[in-house]
Length: 563
Image (cartoon, rainbow, N blue to C red):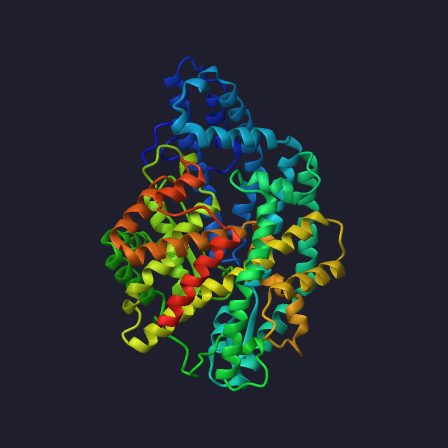
């Protein structure tokens, strides 16, 4: 991206370095529609520059949580610079909304942008700015705590991601030992994470109160721009998943218990192969994962492989698991460079393959939408972003022989992926419903929190699994979910998008090239159109009714039976 408004060599060490750009936009006269569009373009350029600066601070900090300078650089931005940016953001939002020329803008082109900016103006409260800044730094404590979690097994220090590979071991005693090692290690930080959660809830509730909402749940629904569905729709979706998906999972678990000849199915029996074959090993190391992903994606469409190759050439991939690296995985779009960054914690298992093609789907989205004029058009709602990534998980399966030369192993990998598409839905419902409870009951105690998580989780967990002797781990399982701490309520979108992804995959199996054409057209829209229109462009419905859920689960079941 060439910079015209922001200096090419601009750096940010303090607010003074960037203040003049905001003053320019605030004071600049707008005397025509073309003036307004030029103003929007310059503002978008500034947004791209600022968001990328913050992105790199966040990425570097997560790559090495022990480097205090990296943490300080991130904290400087979010506590000293971003609050002042946010004050001007509101000033500029109001200037845009109040412009008499807004009515002359192309309504089809700018509808979503105008709607979102109006929402931001309505929710803006200056008193919330320092709270947002404080929340950013508090939430990062989760990464600092969890990145230090490791266990010693067979005289080796392992990250929890590395230790999780042993849960696929064919020796049941090994699986049990490692399961207790992992969860006992998590339990050491149980109290610290409870305190952290309480701090977060208190501040989030205050933000909602300051905006005249009775709770943070209702505030966040509006803040996330969920114009296309209601809070009640989410609650109904939880129930639909319970009614439709949980019975399928319980059948799968019963089959697992019988196949493994077990008196009871324990949580450490859920990942081992049913034929007691060794764990799948789709790649050797991060380099091998990148090479095989490029091969796989290139066979879907050559440019998809080229996108990942470009990221490799620019060192925009950090994939291996190591101590003092934050947990999780993400694709971070960089709006100035127009090349995204993928971060993950790969240890060589099938789950890592899924994560890579998932984040690779996000990366494809970033590349396909990079020509959009404004950052606002590229800043995606999760329902759209996750559609791109979860669809690629399924579409790419036809080319996983790039990872598996053995047909039997390829079949196992596909079966794992399809079961994952089903199994993840009740967990998503559990996490989302728990957050509904957390924030509509903000003054609860930690004991209430444990009790209600347990109550909710039992509703959405297979009754075939025997939790005796590890009830404590069940009660605190929510602490392993990063989203609850760092990005509240960003989770139900995975379930919504999963249905969309299954629908795209269903179309793909019938007409691959047309489906990919539709997929690319939808992704190229970014967020320049409403969500329902983007889904229609992709050739699917924006629908998460129980009827639609049942239809798609039946399709996945049929595909599993074919395997």
